[in-house]
Every structure is written in C-alpha cells, then in structure tokens.
Amino acid sequence: MKAVVVYEKGKYEVRDIPLPKISDGEVLIKINYAALCYRDLLQLAGYYPRMKYPIVLGHEAVGIVVESRDARFKPGDRVVPLLHEPDGTCEFCLRGLDAYCVNAGSYGENLDGFFAEYARVSANAIVKVPNNVPDELAVLTPCVLAMIYKGLKKAGLMRGETVVVTGASGGVGIHAVQLAKAMGARVIAVTRSEDKASFIRRFADDVVVASKFSNAVKSLTDGVGADVVIEAVGTPTLDESLRSLRMGGRAIIIGNVNPDETYALRLGYIIMKDVSIIGNVRSNRSDVAETLRLLGSGLVKPVIAVTYPLDRFSDALEFMRNSSRIGKVLIKT
Ligand SMILES: [Zn+2]
Ligand SMILES: [Zn+2]
Image (cartoon, rainbow, N blue to C red; front, side):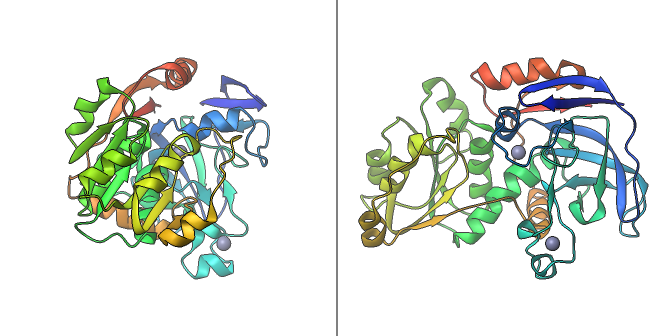
C-alpha cells in the first residue's frame, strides 16, 4: 500500500509498504480521508520527542473497518481513530479518562498513522461514526471538534455565554466558531485578515479584524469582557485573549503556533481577575462519541480548503505551509 513515511527528522516520501497485520483486539481500516494538521508540521520538524523512525505520518482520519479481531467492531463499520491508542486497562482508562492513559501510544509519532491506504488500530482507539455525519466532518472530529468540545466542557460553557475564538480562519478556528455556536454561545471571531472576515461572518455573530482585539471585544460585550476565549493561535494572541476576558473568565489553550516562544504571565493579573487557564490535550473516546452525536444535528459544516490525493502529499504540505487558506487540508486515500 502507499503511505507517507517519515524516515528521519524532517524527511519523508510516499512509499510502497506492506499492508499492516493485525493482532487480537485490533482492526484494519481502509482510510477514506486523512487530514493535515499543524501537529504534522511540528512532528516533521522534530518537536515531538517520542518520534520513532521510520513512521507513517498522520493522526486524523476516517475509514471503514475491513478486518476485525475485536468483538466490538465488524467489517463495514465506519470509524474514526483517536489521536492516541489507550491500553484500556490503566487507572485513567478505567475512569473514562483515556486521554491521560499512562501507556498510550500516539499515531504518527510512535505508532504508524493515517497518511496511508490502510491502518492498523487498536479497537480501544476507535469510535463508530453515526450515519448522519459525513466523512468530511468525521475526519475532523477527534483532533479538532472533540478537542474544542472537551475544552468548552472543561470551561463549563453555559448557553448564552460569549466565546471569543482567535485564529478564526484556521482549521481549528473556523470549526471552533461553529461548535461554540452549536453549543449555544454567542461567538466573536478574531482574525487578522480582512479578506477572510466576510467568510467567517457566515458563522460568527461578530468578527473583529485586528491584532489588538481586546478593546473591540470589550465594546461588543458592554465593557464587561468575554466569558470564554478559545486560544487557537498561541503566544502571538494570548495577551490580548486574557485582556478580552471578563472577571472570572476562562481561557482554553489549544493553538501553539510558535512552540519555542515563552509567554511571561503576570500572576497578579490572573489572581485579581480570577481567570482560569485551561490546558487541553487530546480528547477522550467519550468526547469523540458525544461530539459526533452533536454533529449529527448538522449545525457544524466542514470547511475544507482543498483536498489532495495521497501521492501529492508534498503539494498538500506546501499548501499547508504557505497558502492563505480557510479551513482544513484533506488527503483522499
Ligand atoms: Zn491534528
Ligand atoms: Zn490506559
């Protein structure tokens, strides 16, 4: 089968490799779509310390089970894999917190991932996709939508609250805008691009085009500030994000576009404003299942910038790095 194989730091090629073999408790899936993510760029650049070489890159996919050695799944089931492979037996897995699994492998990092025609996955790591959720939305669920969902749940979002989304035209941002709306929030989207603002306006209640956006957020909230910020960019926008929050506001940190950069946090500001800063590592299996159920309502539309075939992976990567795009980059396998 064809697969994108990273054979050393920063180096990859589309190669022919043997079809994966499965063991008890595992399934073989035929990948329909895989999606590119900023994490793929960071993994190629060597930011992930557990990278094993050679490795099949990719951690976002939707596919069909073609062979199963686990009673929970049968051939023909449409499934999405999590980003990680929980053992199903550790203390965290037993508590339903499989995102914290102490023995979890990670796809595209130390377990072969999904830029390939087929993939081997543990049955502990897949979730069935309801019929009313299309492939193009399912593929975005574990890494993008369920992650946002988990963050908003951790932040205790209530209907009617105001959510600011930074980087609103990005793959995470444009879907965060829609999911927060679907969960009953009023959404203020932030972007630096005037060109993209009109597209984002289709989904958000308000759009602010500025790198210094906190004053605009304040005026849109009668001087109070937002209840929640989804920080989909990272250090470049974090200061303005925290300034945008009301007393007792919550910041969900998802994006980290400059992983080498540090941010000097003034503790007094956090204490006196009673702000919560919420980290957000990968979603749990239950978050993925709950998100897929919510997506069945049709309230969230997949925003896909472009779809490339697997053998044009390098073009897809180039597009991801250099284009001014709205939404996600998909790979059709
Ligand atoms: Zn991802
Ligand atoms: Zn575990």
